[in-house]
Image (cartoon, rainbow, N blue to C red):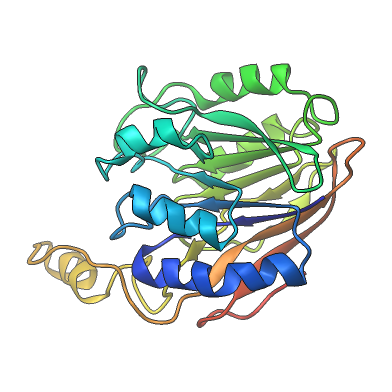
Length: 270
């Protein structure tokens, strides 16, 4: 399979880049399955039902969330209506929606998508992500029930992301970090066939402070005092993420390439 994972969509600029670019990439790269992290797609904080529809219309097969999963209040109901949206597996008990799902790719292959929230440096304590992921991987073996397994590790610390990569080595096809909005350069295939990238980056305007218009974040760093709300930057966005080719028989990754399309960053494509 040819799989594309795109990092956190940031505000209007990120949504526009997805709408304008993803349909073309689906065709040109002959993609079988696309995952988009929609964590910050609506005003930089969460995802609304309306904007979820936009991401799916552009070509996403699955949309993952994160610690801002329910910042847009309509998502509390909308996530129950659309099972293609995945919230963190180890989120608060009783939260609506689900933390994993077995999807069917365009070619008929089964793809498991799992998302977990990390614990290190996060604002609130979440349940153990490793134990939560373990149970799902045991019941959905790579190359068995699922031809491909994708784990979105949404957290601050690269060490925690790397630990999840090695924890899932041989059991996932791809482990990719999200949340920090800065793409890393460590795409690799681990020893047992798991593709890994510490952070997919964001789909947003990189002439910014992690996607936010620069003035207010800089003011707060310099003076320690807030004056206005953060607002997403609206310049041309870069689509950032990772492309993986997998073996349908084993679920192992055969190729991994970092993706950068449009905007300010150096371009990269399969």
